[in-house]
Amino acid sequence: MEYLDYYSGQALLLCGNLCSCYFSGDMLKVLENINNFDKEMYQILKQNLTEEYKNARFYISISTALSIIFAFSMIFLTGFSTEASREVSFAKSICIIMPSFVSTLITVQFCTITSCLQRRFYWLNILIFQSYKVLRESGHSTIRHINFQQDILKQRVLLKIMQIREKHFTLSLICERFNEVFAVQITAVIVQHFINIVLMLIYSGRHLIKDSDIVVEYIVFAVISMSWSFTQLLFLTLIASSTAQEALKSGPLIHQMIYAKKTKLDENLNLEIFFFSLQLLHQNVEFNACRCFVINETLLFAIAGAITTYLIIIIQFDVAYYAEEN
Image (cartoon, rainbow, N blue to C red; front, side, top):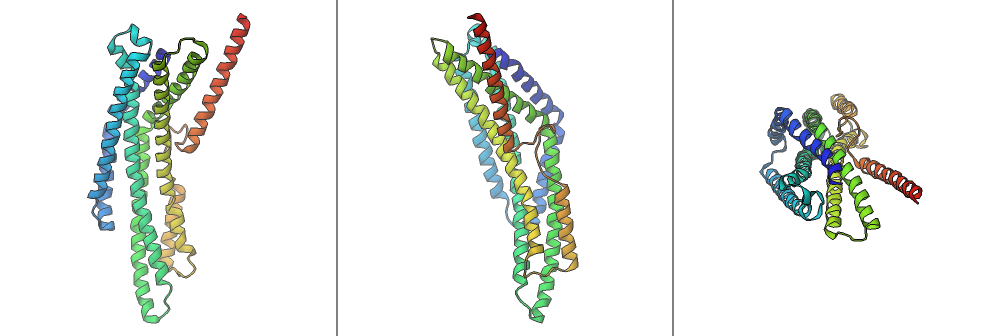
């Protein structure tokens, strides 16, 4: 079992290292664009972003610590439970473990930056909602001298919507470029996790059913390996999907300004909202794996269906094989 999973893991290790080297400049550019975006948002939000950075650093530290704990636990379990570790050197056992560790680091990087992008879409949506509240509250008064103040408020909202539309476009481009940088690595991670879950289910299931002497460490290793693969897939899909959903929330929020019953928009503001709506229509934020499939909740069901199909096929082959022997 270890050698079947070994080659897919080494392919992931090679892919992760090569892509990290090849896209290092692009990744630095993405981080630089996020930093520039934060500087511009500081002028709009008028709030200190230091607290946001502290929270991000805290989550990164926790994720890194969990990854290190996972690596050592997997090394320990592999050393005592796999058959290959009894026949090869400790260095070969490390080679078996390293792909899982690399996939964990790739997942942590992807999820961390994606969460940062989600937070920035949230900032934009807060600004849109605040602009909507200003327009809605200004529409209650009909006194003439107050109407002059309403016109000033609408001009401020118009400028604010123009800024938000520009920042939303910039952030969408950052997401698109970030997805291109990580597309190959994320595809390799998902494929490797899929292979790992399938192989662990097959061989640990056979060991439980057919072998009389059950190795407890072997079963524990299989359960932990499958659980960790599923956990990484779950985090990948949920965080990527939530970021895409946060970007999509800008559409309903901006459309509230049009359908507010007590708000009468002038032509320029109405046109700006129309441009924003058209931009959201043609610039859909999503994360995909080399354009093969979109990373969202449906991916989990697709993987579960594929695993079930493979298990049914293998069980049918086993039944036919032992039927011929008997």
